Every structure is written in structure tokens, then in C-alpha cells.
Length: 311
Image (tube, rainbow, N blue to C red; front, side):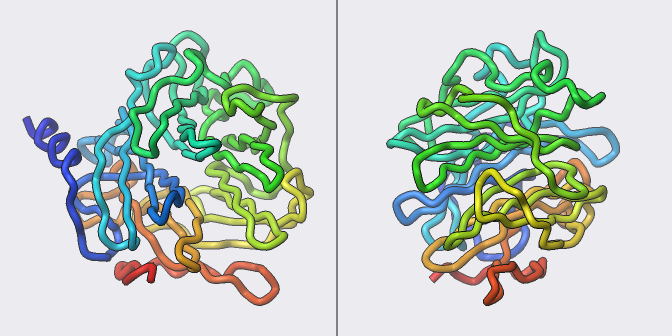
């Protein structure tokens, strides 16, 4: 009954005061965000573990939106494991991007018939859906990447569209990878490439400012967020250091970096919620991101205050 009540509450529009974590009545993780028509759309994983002694329990992904980064509208669970016939569980990290009026949601799932994790993609005409499986099959499966001994190396998709319209899919655990995507956004266009960056664990994210590409990622374990820069989306990447330290009460970390109304923001998850947060019950938080004059990024200071306004 409690689960049903939670599902209903997520479906209605509500507002909250700015603070970190930004939601305290539902556990959210692995944030991804886009800006579309003066609105931020935030896509998160949904931690449903009963406690922090077992393992992740994740069955769907949630959507939130805001016009000021302070008050958030809840759109509920807009995609789940059951929307992919080829998958059997574990709705892990995801990423959404828009191209030509379509919204593509790349997701991590455990494959039902091929051992290990895989990456799928759903599509919609709106940033809040309805989304449907765009392929009927995974775009990346574990048997395509055989240079590791683990079955969770194909996780954490992140898509970047360059200035010339070419899209790239980044992903990986222990081994970072990328591949060009065809114009339809649901097929690979060429071979898979390795990325040379130090101390990589997972959670790749790519953004660009001016003429510099930024590749951020979770490093080590417990995870800090590190980053590298390049003048080309294909590298080589120059390591720049740590962006933020270990997030409170969580050995994992996962970031999204966006610019909204002229300001930059660092979105991440933490286990520091006072409502029983921890390793398997995480919560999304937001803090400002600032650049130095030379284009490097200042260390992120994680706060409980969060941001006051995007204005």
C-alpha cells in the first residue's frame, strides 16, 4: 500500500524549497538533465531498497522539471524495465538528449538472454514522454565488449551531440568507451573506441564550453568525480583533476553538468538524506559550478543549502 501511495504522489505537481537533497520523500540517483524551452528536465534513477544492507533495488526512472531550479514539478515514473521486452531488471543510470524534435532516453538494464548489462534507448515526442523502446533490442550488449572480466562494464550511457550534428555515445565501467551514432540516434556508426583517462570507474558525462570539451567521470572507489579536457570530442584527453570529493554516505557518485540561464550547475547524488539515506538509498543534489579564467573548473563544494535560484 505504501508503494502505491508513493506512486500516486509522484504523479502530481508539487513544489519544494531549495535545499540539498532536492527531494526528501523519494530516493533518486544517477541524475541526467537537459534544458529545453527555458525548462530544466531532470531524469533520475529510483532507489527502492528497503535498507542499506542489501543491494540496489531499481525498477524505473523518474522525471522532474523546473523553470527556476528551485521549484520542481514531478512527472512520475516515465520509463521502466517492463518497457523493454529484452530486459529483465536493474534500471541503472540513464541519459536523455533531444535531436530534431525527438527525445532519446538511453538506459542501463540487465539483459534477459545475453549475460550482463546492456544499453537500450527509448524515444518520445516530448521530454516527459510517453517513451517507448526505439529498437526492440539493446544497442550495446556485454558480448560486444570482451576485454574485461566483469559483466557490468556496459553501463552509464551519456550522449553528446557535437556542433556539426554528429552524436556520440559514451559509456563504461572500468573501461571507458565511445562510438559514433547514426543520424537516427539508435544505431552505431562505426567501431567502438577506447578512451585514455586515468583512474576511471564509471559515470562518463560530456559537455562543451567555448571551444573546450569536458569529460567528467567517477574515479576510484569510493568515487570522486574527476575530469579531463580536449579540443576534440575524440581526444586526446588531458587530465585536470578532481571536481568533487566523495559524496556523503555514498561510495558511488554520478554527475550531470548543465548551463541554465547563463549559470552552470553540478547535479549529483549523495547518500546523506536524513530519511534513511545511504549506499542503496541515494538522493540528488545540486550546487553551482564555476570556471576559472583558463577554462578549468573550480572544485565543487557540496552543500546542504543547494542553490537559491537560477535567475
